[in-house]
Length: 456
Image (cartoon, rainbow, N blue to C red; front, side, top):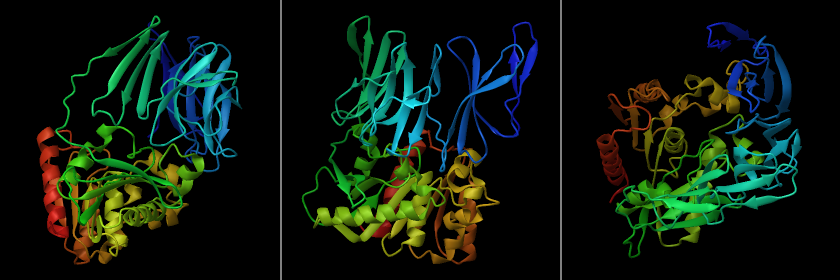
């Protein structure tokens, strides 16, 4: 698509803005500065550079203010860039310390080891940010713009998110203590909570966190609340892809996994290669290959956790389920490692990365014309003749994120190879099945399929 940008005034007059689209094809962000100016965040197609440019609101002329270059990819971070007075706040990867850091005018001010996830707000002396030194948690920090101090504003283990305006901060916290979040308002020197009326699931949680494998992968093992011993079939329940974490110290993150466990499974959730908040080196391990490193981590975590929980996991009955990238990973697992995985449910899976969103895919795999090998390595359709385990494919026909052509392409390849499988098309359903009745019955169908494939 070709994107044009105009400044439109109240009298109807317009001024076009040319941000050098020949070099920077992506207009990532456009925003007003604190001085009522305009600035843009732009990237070239390979996304190895992010430039910040200021726009003259009268002429439309642009001036480059800052440029970050990364040999892997230049990550766009929520809330960045920010400007306060003459100071420019950016977030970029410091490969020397393996840390995503906050910088002021190009100089890092956040400590090494604290991974920046977002900028919340900026004052004359401090920035409020979301950051962590443990990928299973997210905290709110206050960082001095001169780098002299970094102070954690939240300390309880969990996921804490903040919005701020003026002197008021609103922090929403999710922990392992409750499935409901707690929202706290800090204003005018006072602190008070906003009562939550969210419905709580009727579940008794049994979630245990582990650091598994020599790579120190974050995993969670979820067992049936009423389990009284003996071997159980295993169900891996990952997402596994970039930009998202599943192993979080927030009870609400495990509601579906606990429900599956209560149906008679040991459920394992692992965040492996390419997932965020572990540093740029870990995150960029999927550069050029979003298949093998991701799958290898799931297999290694499974075996490591089975050794830690001797007498609990039946490795002759291992299933995997997932949605979106997790659906891709589930299908990949049963196609490529039938020695480990005995059944898979793949919901809304990407099956051929050439069919997916350009900005997302090319960040990791490169241009399909020049990096064809990366796309070949991650394509599921050539693996179709290898299928020897039960596979259920589920896809909403109204999915405008991962379009249903992905599932149909893999299904066609499986049919041509004579490999039995199940396809469940969902009319009128989009990517994440927001309809309550559909979501509920899909869970029941998945359990029935997995129990039949693995044995009760």
